[in-house]
Image 1 (tube, chains in turn yellow, cyan):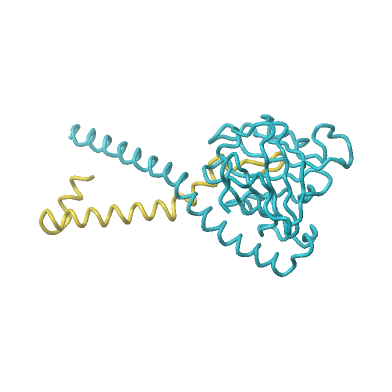
Image 2 (image 1 turned 135 degrees about the vertical axis):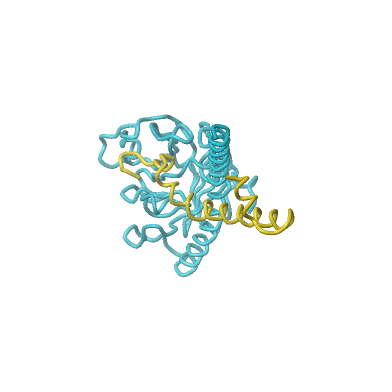
Length: 54
Length: 218
């Protein structure tokens, strides 16, 4: 996967490096602001009350 | 061919590992940022409500689920929070929440509060010891409770939030108590960590911050 990405990115080493960084940033942001907030309530860390379902 | 498949599999595992690592970072620092921002917002709302009506504590029917209703200070943990009304998941996302059917701070009965076991809230609640102060600030007063029991119970043990947890069958206690509930162990949910305290001191806002908060920044 990573070697394939490296091959399809345009430009020389610098261009490829820049593309990699941008892609990494996009993926991390997507995880941090979209995927993780969605996944968090599905985990059992939130059950802090007695009796209720909370 | 086999080499490519094995390499791809290895890369996938490494990637997944990094994603999980990033998720742990989110659980600690991402949540802390959210809690910080939300607490700042709640504090603004509560301060405004108190400024509008400084002479009396809002009656329970005036409290809105998810909105700030008191402030809490725990010197042992070196932290303070705005406590919101309600314990629905949406209420307590970024603040400890007051069980709506329990007493208000300073009243007879049990002021019961639930909070997340996360680093920005009650991660270290197991460090509480008998005699530790838990200070609650309302519109009108400073209320100091002293911890007398720290215990671990089952999630079904609703008696811990009864008006008097030490004699749960009593209809309305005359003791003035506080109860903090959070999940136990850390990162799991099959037990609850419970801290009980009893009111030892109450003073009007005009008398200033109680001495037990001297070590905390104002």
